[in-house]
Image 1: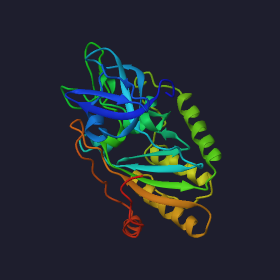
Image 2 (image 1 turned 90 degrees about the horizontal axis):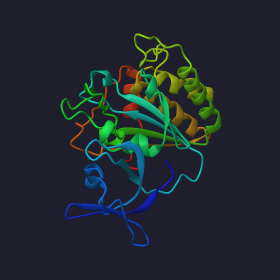
Image 3 (image 1 turned 180 degrees about the vertical axis):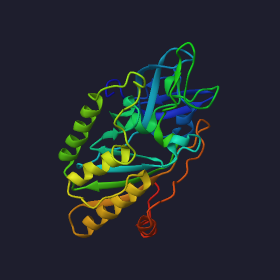
Image 4 (image 1 turned 90 degrees about the vertical axis):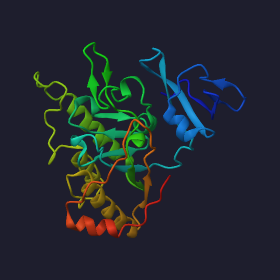
Length: 291
């Protein structure tokens, strides 16, 4: 997705939006720019490019945008706890993902959601075309004519995300672990009755939380526990903070508040089931509210 990236100021006036670069050239002026971007980033610097997917209204390539930020100066890992989506019972416990040097590893009970994504696609996809919630149900829906509404737009527009950022960890080893897991998942036998599902998924042993947890364990953090997203996140952060106190790594805790849009209700924290984790959460360093 690096081809055709434009950097500039997102402008909006009299119903017309565009991205103006440093040479005062206007880009995407006659194309559909999602209202969610304008709501949060008008008059701010952004990156933008076209995706191969097309919007359903005009049948033109979808424009994706994300904040124009400097790349990280050193190898890093970001562990994410995504709050729960209140309109989906399957999201009752929230979700975990992990970013290793810009590769965001996502694991799920659905085969096509076991993937590596860029930061832009994971956090900031627009609610247009196949990424948008269905205009009929407000949720996932595939119409009789095959038109799909997957309701999988940018996670930061869908929910608040809690982040533990780590530097000083072996990112090559961690990345290799998650790539191997994805290879195993995508080569696993498929049940013809439910071909869309990852058949070995198990909330206790083979889920978004346990796979990410096991990867961190391979890097020496053997005491990380938990199989539910928020509990695992708290346990991992607690162990990582202890490693920081020993001078082994550096840790930063912050929060990415939900970028509210009409397509998504405000997200909510899930309860902590482990009593130790409730105590740990109360004693964490205060979370910053942005990067």
